[in-house]
Length: 255
Image (cartoon, rainbow, N blue to C red; front, side, top):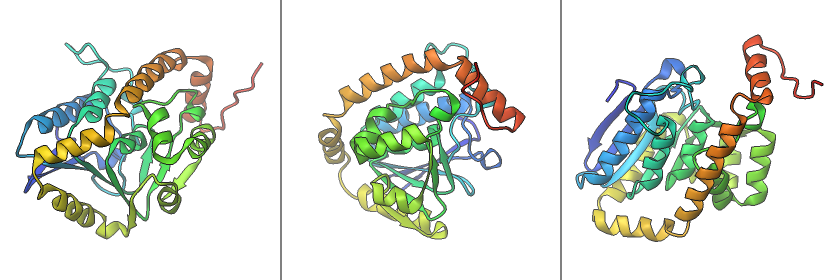
């Protein structure tokens, strides 16, 4: 495990902290593997009843570290990003998340797989895929619709607009909004309430809540991966990245 993904078991609540605050908790290839291994191990450990995912510092996560997106890891058949997604999707115990500051791209879509999300008042969430010339990921094209409805999900994907904490609450993306300085303690207390109950009963409840979603999530992840492969490195994607580097608005209408 790297220093960038920290874990601590607090009376049955596994606190998982994305710990790269100087990079706004952007997630590189090794961190995706650490996330995968953490959730696989937690699923198999009866000493873990519930997990709490949070970000160190002022932000939850700005998602994929673009500087490392093309990185591969020796001995790994799947891309680390994909294997982490599957580990979180398959995690069969309650998952609580506490999100403050930026939650962008993969740092937003992971929240859609949490059973309960608590937001700090500073939350600023964005699905920037259209603006990057890319496609959604982590099964988010299905999960967001399931969580908030097709109309609201389409609006967020197509416009790539920012979502503040109040809109996230109104839309149903988060369960509650707290002051930033009380966010972690509130989320930990709620996770602790969950962790007092028997782990196998909680597994069965989660299975009942999610069993109808899992085939659709799997189909969405497959379709998204194919779409991402088509779009990554496309003229649209290259223009988006070039414009970002050159600090100018992208021009997607060039002839």
